[in-house]
Each structure stands twice: as C-alpha cells, then as structure tokens.
Image 1 (cartoon, helix red, strand yellow):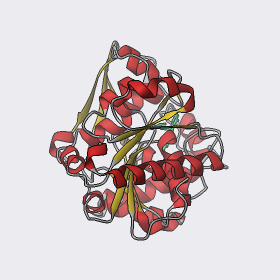
Image 2 (tube, rainbow, N blue to C red; image 1 turned 135 degrees about the horizontal axis):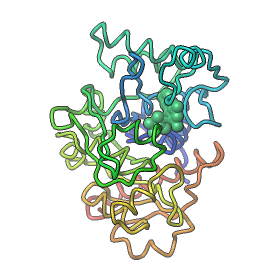
Image 3 (cartoon, rainbow, N blue to C red; image 1 turned 45 degrees about the vertical axis):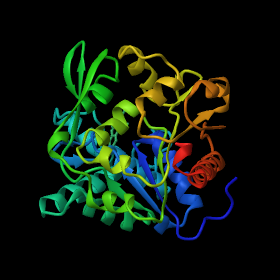
Length: 325
Ligand code: FO1
C-alpha cells in the first residue's frame, strides 16, 4: 500500500463509464480533491429528445457524488419514469430512457450549452452542484461522435450500444469530428507541470472509451510528452470483460482475448500495467512493468484498495525513472 499522499503530487485519470468510474471513485477517496483530475470520454454523447446527453460524464458525476443507480449501472438512484411513460403515450421514442431526476441534468447541460458555455464549464458547474470534489473534465469541448461500422451498417454509438444492445458484429469504430477537435484546456493544464505524479488509464473499454480521446489530435502528443508514468488497469479478467462488450468486440476485431492484446493496444502510451491476480501467469510475458492485484471492484473497499495500489505502482515507476518505462 502506498500510504499517505506525497505532498504536492497530482494525478490524472482517463476514464469512460461504469468500470472507469469505480476506480475514479476509489481515487477520489484516497487523494485530496485538488490533486485529482478525471478526464472523461464524450464519444458516447448524443442529442436525444432535444437534450444533450453525456452518459460517461454523468456516470462519473453520479458515482462520485454517491447518487448513482447501482442497479441499472447508469442514471440516478431512486429514479422514477413518468416522463418516459408520458412519451410512450405520445408515441415518442422510449428505447433510450431518460429518468425524471436525470432529466434535470440533461436540461441544465443543454440550456447552458445553448447559452454559449463550454462542455468543460457545464461539467464543472454540475460537479460543483453535486458536491463532486475532483475536477471532472470532458476529453474535448468539441463534438466527437463514436460510430460503429457493423454487419447491419453504420450505427451511431447509442443506437448500437443501447438500441441494439451491442449485438451487431463490429467491423470498425470511427470517431466522427475527432480530427477537428482538440483536448479540453483543463485536461491540457492537468497533464503538464512537474507536480504531475502519474496518469491512470481506468479499466474502461480501450476501443470504445479510451480510443475516442486518443483519436483527437494533440492527445497522443500530450501523453507522449509525459514526464510522469502512465499506467493502465486491465478491463479484462480471465479473458472476460468485467462489464460490457469489451471481449465481444475484441473477438469481432480479430484480437486474442487476453491482457497482452490490451497492452499491445496501449503500446507507447503506458509505462506499467495492472492486471488481475487471476491472470498472474500472463505477467511475465508482458514487456513492461506490471502490478498483479485484485482488480474486481465489488465494494468501496475494493475501489480504494485498487486506487491505493495504482498510486503505489505509479510512484515506484516514477522513482525508478524513465528507464523503467
Ligand atoms: N443505458 C441503457 O442500457 N439503456 C438506457 O435506456 C440508458 C439511458 C441512459 C440515459 C442517460 C445516461 O446518462 C445513460 C444512459 N444509459 C442507458 C447508459 C449509457 O448509454 C451507456 O452505458 C454508456 O454510454 C456506455 O458507457
């Protein structure tokens, strides 16, 4: 265990939805709020029923504020669905469900964006209102929309993921708008400076949740210029995805279902890899420093323990210097 926080050190976490948010919560419990910046995927964002929905940002905000609906894995606890029932009566779309409480978030975001505020500003505002301490930052203030080329044609991300329950076979994944986007300024600022102790890629889907960020010009360069170690936490345990369609997509993209494929995907980006104790026999074949630990985050204690373990691993890599990479 890493023990107390080293004075002055700052950490950046890159994350998508549920799996990433669990580790982000752990990190938020073991680091002072002003020492953690959580950069979140916005490739899943879309406009629905006239509202700007940012699912991964909301999952992070709701998880860190203790308001998340842990049964659904998205949205707010104690949710009611009268809006959806009324929509159904009017013959409106009900495939993507916006809860009555959750609606307030989307309405606030949509209104503030229409007033000319950036997604970064809106996210900071929502975080403040919900009592979230660490900085939560979108990967970009510009629109980047994940699209999936499938055996049923090209599908917008939420149509594929929620509408078609990730059933179509994935052929390729595209990030529309990424080439014209740039990293959010608050993320850029978080990644520079001698006090940056490390970058943690949360156990999110590398292809759906981390690649949108990497597709934006400037992000790879920012990460390549890192003076602090970058470590990734496996989203695969024993060849299975902890959550969601990671394993299914890897198979469809012709990739082996193992942690080596995840490490390969992050080549040049990471200096260390955290894998689950179940996969300990795979560690020696990976050509980078590894940490073998429990990565299954069932309880809050699991989340804080994994967060502590990641911080300790990052600090050890940093102490060993660039040759450890
Ligand atoms: N996921 C679902 O499976 N069904 C839904 O109806 C649904 C609604 C929804 C509304 C707001 C929100 O922020 C997220 C929502 N999600 C829903 C989850 C979400 O679309 C995905 O889990 C993420 O995009 C993948 O990280």
